[in-house]
Image (cartoon, rainbow, N blue to C red; front, top):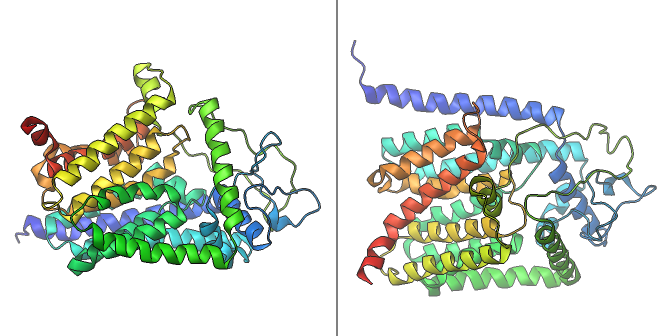
Amino acid sequence: MHISRNKIFIFLFPLVFIASLGIAIIRDIRNLEDGYACDLRKRIVGSRYQAAGLSPYYYKWKPGQPEEFCNPYESGPDFLQNVVTLPPSYLWVLQPISKLGFHTIEIIWFIVQYLFLLSIFGLFLWNIKELQYRYILLTVFSLFFFSKGWITNVDIGQSYILFPLLWSVAFFLKNKKVKAYFFAGALLAVCCWLRPVCILMVLPFLVSDKRASFLKGFIIIGCLCILQLLLFHQYENWQDFFHSSFQWGKYYNTLGPASSTDFGNGKWPSTIEGQSDFHITAIPQYTANLPIVASSLFNIHIKSLWYIVLFFILATTIIFSVYKKRTQLKLDTIWISSFVIYYLSEVFVSVPKPSYYFVELIFPICIMVGSKSIFKNRTGLALLLLGLCLSTFAIRLIPMQLLIGEYLVFISLLFFLSNQLKIKQQIINQ
């Protein structure tokens, strides 16, 4: 009995995806049982500070105070600020869940993170009709489940997968045609409220052909976010947030991106909210900032100011290219341009860009896979799949494998963006 290759693929790719998902969930459950979600702890503690009327960024637990306020990974006495770095808006959103016991919160957050990731998968799979693109999407997620960025994100209770979900929802609404840019503006306003640096993603939309519709959505939802600040009296918290962020930025800029802060040397109870083991699962880590990469690969040492200048040059080039082609560009290209600028800002600043930021890349990857032009540049597709394979770290092949894997994924986005904007052709014409 002859079975066609397409029929084999129809069963093979979903089977690999389901198997990968099952293995990843079992692995992460074990990590959850054995480790401690240190980053989730500091977010929940910060949310509790805020609910109690304390400064989420400068209050520090002392012996004799409620254990719910204790964070075993607090900054040392040399730092005025604590280790809470989320803006007041995010802490406010966490307040309902922060009232629960921390172990219960760990379980809930674990489930939420997988629901977020699978929701992104579902949104893009729904929009992709051609089988070959669905196969690639299934392959991407099968590899992504084993990326160290995703493993770390789940293990320490990070929250970066929320932003790709919000971007994906906004992108999914592109089928609304006229309102597509309105929804993009509305969802990006929420992102800026939850993470102010997302304001950089707004720039390509502001020079697009549909900027009026985008601004309408951005301003309406932005005003609601400002209203929340006023109604819940968070003005002082926002002041503390920006001041604390400036202090951390100054610290890392002085110390150098290759250095890290030694936390966890304070005194705390042996048992906190029923937990006594505060060790973090041993997972290979890396910091994906360009000064570190340049220094490691090419022995280049330059001041961070020049990296900032280089970022502005690259961002301006992308924005100008979008402006020149604004009447011809699809929303896909605008979103990729928006993300590339956002990603470059994380890479070029002196504040460390840890491995769990990797999960943000799933959004532009899905856009690229869903685009009909993905096979037009086989080099970009090869770099994407190679980068994802290296990011899994299944076998140690080369030095700095995780870091190089992430940058190969990003370079594949640049190939895609260059093809869409035809930047090379513009330069020749000029």
